[in-house]
Length: 201
Image (cartoon, rainbow, N blue to C red; front, side, top):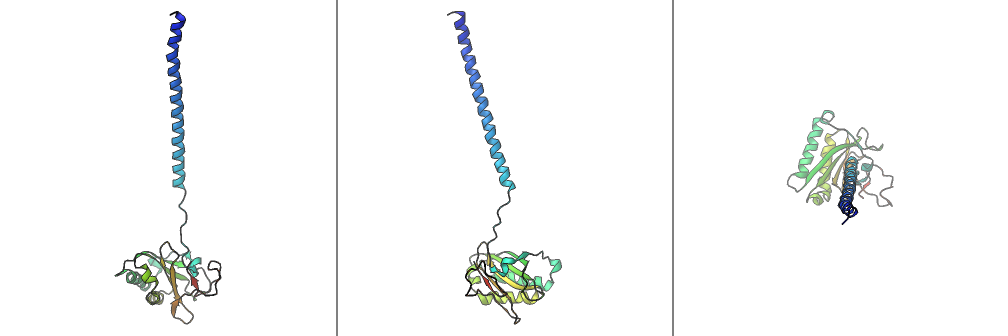
């Protein structure tokens, strides 16, 4: 074996190691690139707000409800007591949970004078069907709330995350009665509702 042969044999493993080093380097860069992409996607996902999932509860008067900041400081004690009593009456002895109860601005002009607000109970549980199919029971609760809350003219009972809901409100005859879905409505989503009219989607 001559000198040239020795140099060739010596260079082969060096060249082989250099190729391995280049491949390893490329692989590392590619792995870092993938990690950065995954990290960026995760950050974007965290930054994006969750989609608004409010269900189309009670088309009509409640479809225009606007958020109203009601707190114990601007609600009379007798009204707060009536709302608490209503919640207890709904839950006691039943497999039912009030997920939320809040006062909203009706946002319409044909509600009873000086009563621009609605109280909404969002509920879930096995007893929800028995409640939403008991108009007399719901009417009695709504009547007590409306009689004790000067600004409330409607009380809505709804099943959480569904479009099943019932509403009861103060009518021109000064009685609390259920809202009704007119039989002549062709499209419940585009109909121009009047006070006392409402349809579930």
